[in-house]
Length: 225
Image (cartoon, rainbow, N blue to C red; front, side, top):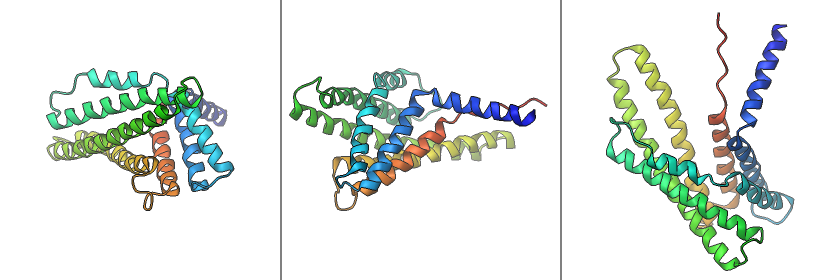
């Protein structure tokens, strides 16, 4: 009976995880960049999977810019340094622009918007926003890491220090992800084609997708004794 209850609890967690639109988007993202890694930019089935999944993902991001706009206008903590506040605002502004432009790209790729040249131009502009947003987020996470280390050192007790350590672990993971996304953006924009090849872009994109999925995992409910 206990094994059955444990199975039900695990299935409930999986259901809660898959019910998130963000989780489904990141699963598709891992497929997209995994296919990019396999294809290495060469024609074939893997490249077609990469392209079709990339287009399908854009549907999951409809009106996602609203989330970033909400973060943009949300009040910041009183103890947060001004530099970190500005970096967070910059990241939200750039990512909101990226998601908004990405919807125009989706309309162009599906044939709703007929101007192909402008669609490609908007696509490149959106990727530059993604690059800028990832860079701003990387700097923000790094700043938060330093800020938390200083707060941890001043912690009054072990419980408070443990809380800071947990926040620190999450920030380090976020910093790794955003830093790797900078490489992904460079690869998509082909700013360094000899160093950041489609295979490198695919590998980094696949890893950041897995990190995002890990961050979205729901916490298991603690059973009362």
